[in-house]
Every structure is written in structure tokens, then in C-alpha cells.
Length: 316
Ligand code: C5P
Image (cartoon, rainbow, N blue to C red):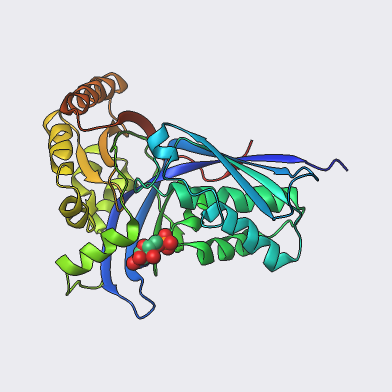
């Protein structure tokens, strides 16, 4: 038997097609109905048996990424969810030897696309393989849910609805493939701050419910209906904290996007530019128009196109 000394796992970003936020629960988290959709912006997490000369901590982290401003927002200590994932797996299994973890980050950092959670999912899968734990999928999903509300989705990918605080996942029927444009902000937003602003703006939030129009649009692969049914209850809170996002959303809508919304807690804005049964030439034309309009605002650090949905964590 050969023993791996390095394992690399690729993991996608997510956009929320619906994010319905209910009241704050007793544990401080909010009841959610969260429709996750995995898109083709990937982080790669590499874990490697550490050199015996390195001081004996379980993990040491390094990162590369899109830009200095994104990298500056990545914690390189045990505050990083990828390091916490490795520690939790070691604690739960009694396995584990020191590892160097490298994060190659293409997912916007603190951008509302679950990049930190994705890295945690990838680190769990990579350490499970490197340490030979061989945990069942159920146990990995359970550990993921304990690490954070969005971590389990990184393992699952495709399109799924999360309930509870977002961690209880059910796959959703979504046969279509869609094209998205993402406008990255030069700023980051803290998820906890956005939920706090939500509480201030919506003290009497009702119980969250899955939008049946969205469910139908996904099942039929109808891009126009999907664009019309995108929704995010956190959007007013994100706009309240970063008002210029409204201009970004308006620019993409004005250029013909089928739907536009803040992704998760933001500040990344997501624009559906087509897919399903639509003619690919028409989709490409719409995409070019939306990209040009977003760049012309001068508000976006980067504008990137991606496809959804895509599978979750994959060992490469
Ligand atoms: O679970 P996760 O670590 O991703 O959550 C980050 C923060 O977002 C939490 O500390 C909490 O403030 C907020 N949150 C929430 N309700 C949820 C999920 C997250 O209030 N269902």
C-alpha cells in the first residue's frame, strides 16, 4: 500500500439562490432556509506531512490568492476554519500528525461565498485521506456541521437546501446549468455584523420558508424564472452597511442580467446571465454586456464569470 504524503482537495464557492432568515434562536444563530448553489470558483487546499524540523504544532498555514487585499483578510492561525477542521478531526479520531496546510484561494475572502467554510470542508477531506482515518460520509458531514453553518455544503456541492442554522442539507432537483457573473468588492463584510444589522432592521422576522417558485424554476431549468425568483433576506442589511452595493446591483440589472442579488452576507454581488435551455450565443452576449457595465461602475475590484452548479469537494 502506498501512503500519501500530500493531498490536494478542490472545493467550490457557493451563491445563495434563496436566503430566508427567521428569528434569532436561543443559541444565537438564526433559523434559515438557505438554497445553496455551488459555482466554479474554486479554492485548493493542500495538506502535507510537516517537516520534522518544524515546531510541533498540529498545523501550520500558508495562503496564496487573488490579491493582497483578499489575502490580508485570511487568518493564518488557529482562527482559520481549515486549521480548526484539522484539529477537530484529530480530536475526534485520535489520529493525526503535524501537517502544513496551504490554501490557494480563488474564492473571494469575506465575500459571502463561503470561502472559509469551503476550506474547512476541503481540509477535513484532505486530512481524513492523509491520516488514513477513512471516516464515513455521515461522520464527515457531522464534523462539518459542528465547524460552521456552511461547511457541510462544501462536501456536498451541486444545489441543496439547508435548514436549521443552514447545516441540515437536502439535495434539490436542478437539472439546468447556469452562467453567473460575480462582482467582487474591494471590502469584506463580517457575517456576524450582517446578521446583527438584520436583527436591527427586522426585529420581528417570520419563520423562514422555501420559495416554491424557486423550486419550480430549478426543477424546470428555466433561467428567466430562476432569475425572477432569486432572493436574499440579508440583502437590506448588507446594503445598509455598504450602500454602494446598490449601484453595483443596478448596473448589472440595467445591462440585462436575469437576476441580481447580494451573495449570502455579501459584499460580493451575483448576477444570473442565463443558462438552462437558452441559446449559448445569447447567454455569452448578455454576459459580456453585464461584465462591461459592472467594470464601468469603477466600484468592483474584479468581475468574474462562473458556471453552476458544480460538485463539492474533489480530491485532485
Ligand atoms: O456558522 P458560521 O460560523 O458560518 O456563522 C458565522 C456567524 O454568522 C455566526 O457567528 C452568527 O453570528 C451568524 N449566523 C447566524 N445564524 C446562522 C448562521 C450564521 O446568526 N444560521
